[in-house]
Amino acid sequence: MTSSFDFAPLFPAGLPAPSARWTGLAKYSFVGGNNDSEQVPLEGLIEATNLALQREGRSLATYGLAHGPQGYLPLREFLVTKLKRDAGIACTVDDLLIVSGSLQALDLVNNTLLARGDTVIVEQESYQGALTRLARLGVNVVGIPLDKDGMRMDVLAATLADLRSRGIRPKYIYTIPTVQNPTGSIMPESRRAELLLLSAEYGVPVFEDDCYADLVWSGQRPPAIYAMSPNGGVIHIGSFSKSIAPALRVGFIVAPWDVMSRMLALKTDAGSGALEQMVLATYCKPHFSTHVPALTKALRTKLDTLMEALNEQFGTAAEFEEPKGGIFLWVKLPDQVDTLKLYQAALAAGVSINPGPEWSTNKGHSSSRLRLCFASPSHQQIREGVAVLAEVCRREFGVPARSANVEKQA
Image 1: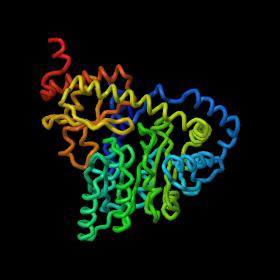
Image 2: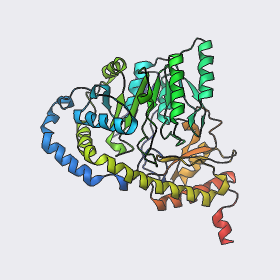
Image 3: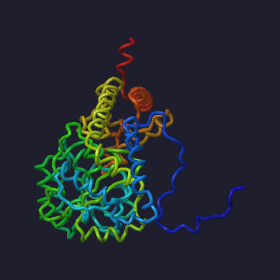
Image 4: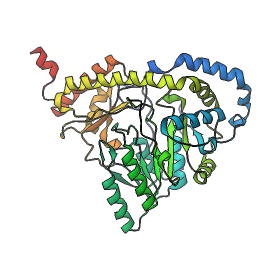
C-alpha cells in the first residue's frame, strides 16, 4: 500500500525543484562527466584495495582514520608531490583538504564566502554545477566571454572597473583555466599573470577549478594560478574524478589557512569516504604518472572519432574548436537550432546531449550550442549516436540540409 501522507505542506520555502526518477542512461549518452570505463585501472585498484585494507583496515574504526579532519595523510602527501610536479604548486599537507568530489569543494567555498545578493564573476560558458549552485544561492553572476585562450582579460578589467564604480566588490572570480569546461581551452601563463594583477588591484580572489588539468593532450600545462600568486589570493580545487574514476567522489581544496579553517568548520559530514582515500593513495603513488598518459591517449582517439563523425554527418553545419584536452567537445550548430528542443527530441530517439544554455550565463549566445562528452561511449556508439543526432536535427530544424552519407549513396 502506498503512503498517502502529504509531506508537501512541510517543505520549507526555497527548496530546489524535485528530482525526476532515474530511468537509466540513454542508448547513446554524450552527457555528464563520465569517463572511459575501459580506462579505469581496475586491476591496480583491486590490488591497492587489498594492500590498503591489509595494512591499516583496522583504522576504519576511527573517524578520519585518526588522520584528522583534513583527510588521509598519505593521500595529502601524494598530492603535495603531484601538485608541485604537475602544477608548480608549493604547498604542505596542512594546506590541503580532502573533500567528496569537487562539487563538495564548490559548496564549501560558496558557503564560506557567499551571501544572498553577493556578486561573483565567472566565465560566460562554465560548469553547469557551478552555475546552478550560484542561482540557488541568490547570487548575482556576471559572465565574461571567452576566446581561444580562455577568459578575456580586457572584458574582465572593464567589468571590474564598472562594478567598482557602482560600489560592488565581487566575492570571487571563478575560472576553469586548464582545459576549460565546456570549451576545452587552456589559459596561457601570460594571461594568468594578467588575471592575478587584476585580482590584486580590485581585491577580488581567484577561485581556480582545475578538475580537468590532468587530461592535457600534450602532457604540458601552464603553472596553476595558485602557484603564480604572490599574495595567496587564490583558492584551488581539483579532483580524481577525471584522472581515475568519477564514482570514487574524491576531490581536494588548496587554500590559505584563514579560509581553510572556515571551510573545515562547514564540512559537517564527519569526513569524506576513508576507503576511497586509502585506495587512491596506495594506487596513485606508484601508478598515477603512467596511468594518466595512457588515459589521455585513449581519450584523444575518441575525440578524433567524434570530430570525424560530426564532419561526416553534419558537414559544415557543426562548428567547433578542437579542445586541448579533457572529455568534452563544445559544438556550434546553425542559429535556427534550439538545442534545448533538440535535447528533448534526441532523447526520445535514444541520444542524450547537454544543451548549451545550461552551460552559459548568456542563454542567447549558447542557444544553438551543445556539449558532447566523448569519454564514456565506445567508438561505435559515438559514430552511431552522432548519425541518429543528425537525423533528429534534420527532422526538427532542417539541419544539416543534406548529410554526407546521403550524397555518397546518390
